[in-house]
Length: 355
Image (tube, rainbow, N blue to C red; front, side, top):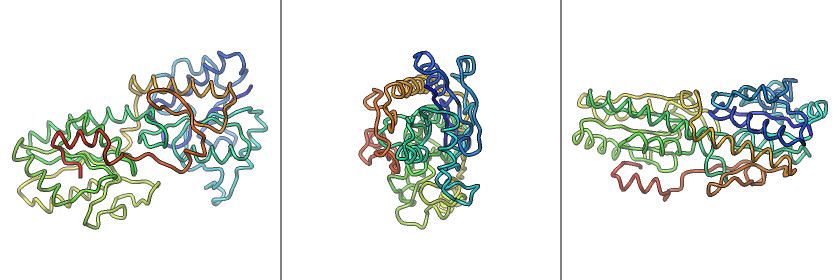
């Protein structure tokens, strides 16, 4: 067999560990003679970008951040930006044919899985591997890259706490996550935040302001960890006021600055509010040990699925066991934080403000 591997969407700690595991497991099997890396996601199938992957190529990339193959989050072959949004999927399939690929392993988030599902319907043998720091892919309990992002958030909150305490401030830390609050929730708990704001639970500005004032009176400062997709119950605060305007699925970021201004307006000169946007710091750097292991598990399972010819499916972690789901059951869906999730209830029991 000849198998292609690509990484689509945003970069994420652990991608290279998946590429390494897929390549080594396929070549070790004896049933696969060649593995080819498609460069910059599906763009490589449209613009002839690819190169061979072998044991020597992937041996030392386990702990590297980013993707050695490069990635792209706008190269949808079914609506190709360089062709004015035209359907160029036929061109991509022609590249698959010229390369002689018997299967494709697509590593990516919900957008990549949606594209993979469409190609599957066109007859391309494809296996999906879920990748996102947001941890929001349907049917998958834990995505690699998420643990690494949470570690960055927790460390950042620890650092902000010393400044907040020294100056008697309210400090806001904005995380990624789009419309899912997993990063802010786990990162806020791990970093000792006093308030955690997530998109799934709308907050009330007056209640949040009163809570922060009480916290400052009790301990001298307040830490607020918030997700980029949050919303206020009663004010006009929504995605249209963000620095990056964004309906669902588009770029977000900047809501923390709006919240800082709103809170400062409530506090006046009595209390100072500062804001930090973590942004792509959450994506960069080496993966944590947990993410290296999870990425390896996903890569090995993807290779097994190729060898078993279980195509049209995505690797998934359920009850800490690697299994698989049909791509059609994943495409176009996301995984949000349930309102009664154990961690939400834990935050409430700790006396945190969580909307």
